[in-house]
Length: 631
Image (cartoon, rainbow, N blue to C red; front, side, top):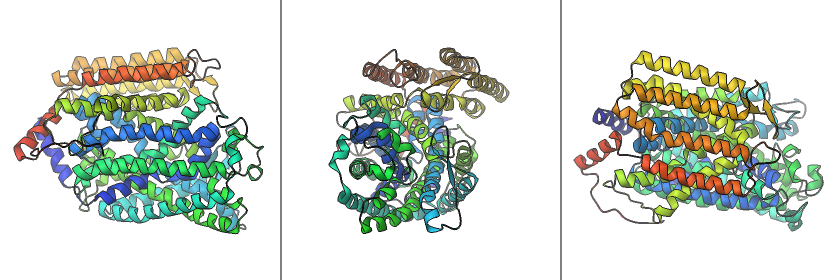
């Protein structure tokens, strides 16, 4: 059965066009990295952490680089389209693979949404100036939160943009690669010129304004990493991984493109943040000097760099601001186009592993997974309506995505044990240290996002489990279709009811109890429901299914313990945290370390990885020496 499934997957992968070079892969990653993040994140990040946010960019970049290094080895060994959602399935089977793949899919499909929102939000800063008599309004300011939100017209424009992203992806990866390369060159040039020009308005005193370099405190420095767009801005490195099945020389080029893109991104964003802080004009902002917390609600929030250039006092700077208005369409649109492709391949990967119906593996004559492409558009539009704001989506996308990255180091270590025969063109030196560090890095970023964000991340991960019962369990676990449907429906109703009567977080840190169920009872009840669902599957499943459930137990425990720790720690809603910083962060790191070793022990030689190894042996594709490198 595994061999038959393996043949189907390889046959489907073979239909994808192998057209991408190292240059294309690098530019796909950079195209994902340089999007709406460079237009909005510098202001949001400075508003959360003050001048010390420069360190946030460096720390965040270093953590993401460690994660990327672990994926580079695995991607060189097993280049696959939709790679990140497929690796957990190969190391831990279906239960772990589904939960992480589902979380990753939710974040991938929302990136085109947030990029479209970025285009529309920035347009509000310049369209009234260009067309003053038309009274164009695409956004409004929410009175409770001060956040810019798309109105009906703005949502309509965003929908049109997302349809455009879909059409461009329909015409195949070759067109996507070439078009993205042109757009990404533009993305390099415009921010680069912005950095140069803003140096003419540079004020070194801004770095000590207010309460000094650490004006917002040390914890804020770390919380800015997941919540203000820093991690979101780095997440594009995954493009080279997700398009790996369409590369000409994937085993050589995918690892290189992944690493090069993260290093380039750190340099790029640190320079942008330095010049943004240095060129701040507090009078133009309408804020007192050093009022960092007021940046997010200031008049610059809809177009930070454009407003800054116009306040710089030089005609050249003010004139160049109009190029930023053009870039506010080009950069997010280019990233939205790339991520629509990533979303498509993520859904394709989930379907390949039997988590979704097989229709999503169908590939058009142009080499595009067409049904998956349409599904990516539809799900992205569903997220647009309840979350019509860049600032509302960015924290969820960042944290849920990074949660799935905990498998980078785990996958590397498990696959060295279970698939040591496969060649590794890139073999990570010091993996014994870097692999657990990658897990801890991802876990800390998730922890720093805070309880308010984790409330939605945890709910999003587990609410997808009925799909696992409906589609995967009958095909792979020996459970009857009727029983699987009934089990999924009961669990879905229970989780929705628990969420409705449980807690949620309104704007700000205040804890709100909507339905009478406090936080701890809510978490306890949700945990019982998830364990009962998994226990029922275990009792009904065949031997292979039972092993998969056991192999995923560590992830359920890790996510719930991180959730609880966040509530009692410095990044939770309590006015007086039970566990103060930095002890809470140390405990989160130790929890990550323990979970890493539990995950490694839980990994096993799944039927699918055994089939891949057997296929490589039969075709001779594992011949040749494995090289060590730390490029």
